[in-house]
View (cartoon, rainbow, N blue to C red):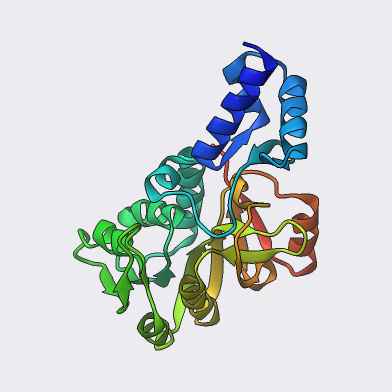
Length: 255
């Protein structure tokens, strides 16, 4: 396969999944990581994709990747993260769970628990958890988004603000590598997540490594506002420094 064809395929693959690692691409094209790195550098110089430490991404900062694609993206990482978070949640706890494919995996991982009280603005989470008779599942009011089952709007924010819970579990679209800003695509969704952060005794952020350095428009808050970051790979140095400075515990979730 010629260089040009390979670069076209790289763009196609990265656009389909939002992110691809150098290892994945090297294995796929049966070339060395150095070759892929050169390809990525060339494509980044032409503004066709964004370079990252260890990979490349394509993302517009206004729209998120389609929900079904996101569900498949980094699925293994999300399952590992979910498993670890579930281990930290005691039976009988109260929690918020927000919108996102990672938080849906967390809901699945919590099915072994007993006596949980869950408040969520994600109908997929409610549907996963409703099978447990000993769980109290409370769904926030508001408008349901057809694309991913998220419930958003002023009513949702007001609803969230009525509760005070033990654990707030939030997923996020992107994390700014330079200053640790938590970013999302939807202003209304951001308002809900802010409500969750404000009303939880412990805030757990679930974010696979592809979220670092992705672009999104609306600032939700900062990584320094969470108590623990659950991720599947070591974050960039700038983020590590912020976590340390603000005593945010980094939980690396591998197999």
